Image (cartoon, rainbow, N blue to C red; front, side, top):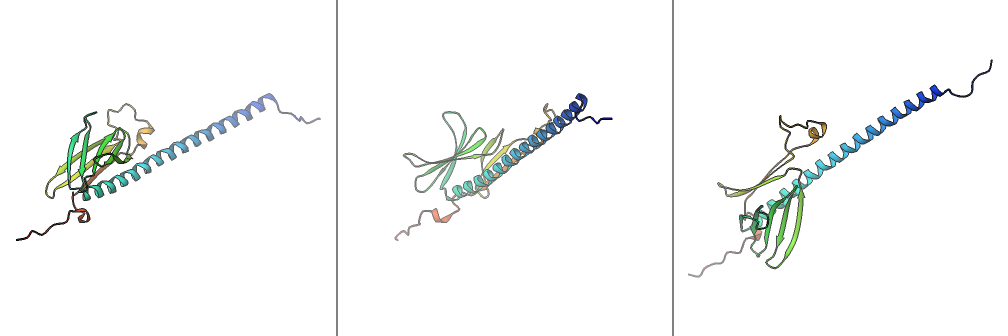
Length: 184
């Protein structure tokens, strides 16, 4: 009796089916891993930007002589304007998913920084008393509500951002104007 050397058509189809299932599972695993990496990068970028914003806002506020809230003429966005002893101004405002910091001298813009914090960003500036201080509150990526119609796994992965930065204006004495003695 002779042994067969070739595979039958049914055996070949079974091998091809098994290989395509394994390949599909590998592609699915790779896609899930890539999404997780992107979500993790987005989370850590938001955390880094929130930390940078907190440091910069406190440093600016501690150096500032005064602060006031204005509405931007072109789009009606709430803007916090800080005044410095050297005539420089710094504006903080929301622009879509980011907070903008615009530093300018009376003649021109000297610096522009963007702090990307997340989707559905809401920024609020507020002055509080006792002690007098300013608060920058930012919320992004709110948790889905019970009536949210898209409860899929992408909503579960979104990490909400709740940021409240408090700072006292004029706290850094290095930038205070020198007191002069009055003659009697």
